[in-house]
Image (cartoon, rainbow, N blue to C red; front, side, top):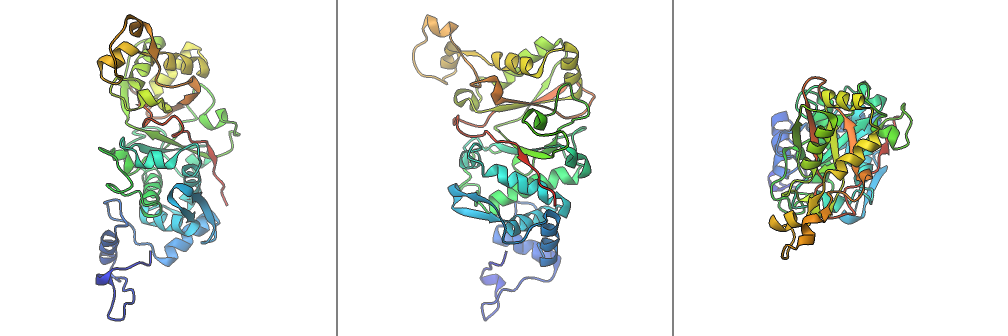
Length: 353
């Protein structure tokens, strides 16, 4: 963060960083280093504390980003984590999230530059979630917890400042979502009908992990009824005719609130059975896709009987539990676009120093 402009340089061209904190904040605004909200000025001492929190040297390369022709160093991650308001102990989570961004399966450029402007949600599993007090229950997607708010914000600042995904330039989203400011949650592993997500992915329960979810939107499902009726509603939300994801079949996610998780526990159905039923319920007839203008051509009798599904396979659906134990509400997060080769983030191990 050593660049300057004319207004921030003295007669000899030397950098003049303001001493007053409010002026430092305005300096960051003037340089375009913010997400539109004030940031914490990144002093050398604060950056060093953040690096220590991750057990990292400044020059350590966290991830190479070939699509952006840049390598993200630990120091750059630490600077943006400070600006986001993170505590040093959050650094290992942010580092793992940056590594997830760099995986080919995630398809960074598709997710970060798409017209659909997806939210990139950070999902944390394992003991570190409790240790850092990352919210997994009441108002899980809302405000109130520093860890949730600042970890997600740090990743967005890295996208803006290190990877140059700026609105109207490389970030071409038409609408965007409020989740592009920040979106970080933990899975509620204590009130869960099955094994948690990271264990399903082959990790040990005592491991801590990060998974990224690229979602075009978030749809709350309010539903009282039996489990089969509920799963029909979930499938409908993942495949509404206006969804940008229905043709591209990018992976989606469902976040089950407490009452719905309990409903599925009582059903006795396995996680795989539920996943298969939900994806099976996303089928839309070719005829309806043509009526909605999503596909071209005249409607034939065969189109009325031929179904197109929102995902290629049930394995493309992420099922996790989070939110309040009270209220028959869950969150559906459809995929973000038209590329089957993007939005598939592996689960990354969090390495604590």
